Amino acid sequence: MSAVPIRLTDVADAAGVSIATVSKALGSGQDISSATRARVRALAEEMGYRSASSTRRPRAGSTRTVGLLTSDSVGRFSTPVLLGAGDAVGAESMSVVLCDSRGDDIRKRHHLQTLLDHGIDGLIALGATTDDQPSLGDLGVPVVYAYGASTSPDDFSVVPDEDAGAVTAVEHLLALGRRRIAHVTGPDDFVATRRRATATERVLAEHDLALSGRSPLTGDWTEQWGRVAAEMVLRQDPDVDAIFCGNDNIARGVCDTLRDRGVRIPHDVAVVGYDNWEVITVAARPPLTSIDLNLEVVGQTAARALFEAINGSPQRGVQRLPCRLVLRESTLGGG
Image (tube, rainbow, N blue to C red; front, side, top):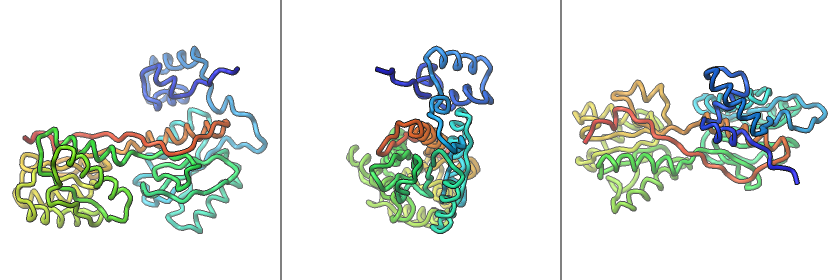
């Protein structure tokens, strides 16, 4: 009986480093110390790790290239996923080709056919949002879905854990002693909106608490909506002491109104955003505590799963990866 092959994640666990560090050590070795690179490479050799590219059975027309098909024309979410996938792809001595359909089905079909004609070994299909994306079906090459899960249970998807992210945000506010927590979020036709709101209310209920205002305030993913919603929150509950926002744009708008109304952040009202878009969070007044979706890890994980599928070991279902809380002044220092 053949031994179970050693995977990149096994080397990372044994070395006590991230998968990205292992990828860099076994690839170009850039951005890490020579000592770490040498230690990881020696451990990988000792464990008998072989990259997917070295163990893959050769096939006619292989280009050692994978495709990444995205609908995110803005690039806000696709770029970090691409960077993460690029780290993993580079470690396998392969290349990645990015195609942006800009949300247009005709353009999407054209790019997809072009990638297949190019002879890609596999494809990462990147959703524009965390809503489910339609399955591409059998393309003749392995496909892994990222950011938004496939609608088919036969496919494999790698997505951020929306529920856990919201839970982390609310538990952080509760740990600060906040008990009158409002939730201002985006349109209710987004799955992300509903999942985050449901998780928020569930955590509060577990602590015998209800949302300030009794229900989430839903609107646009914009600063303008955040400013308007903050006025509504203050009218509904003048004693509100925390606001959890569905994204960072909304959170910055909320902070604008609170500041204009003389409400001290975080002393009077703590504010948490979502997505950790540093263009917004670092420049906000005050800088925003936010939930980071760890999109580079989503990209790395999706690429590794694709390599395994190319090598004959496809997976099924949905893998939800943890988010992380990034602390800044909008919650620190209050009491």
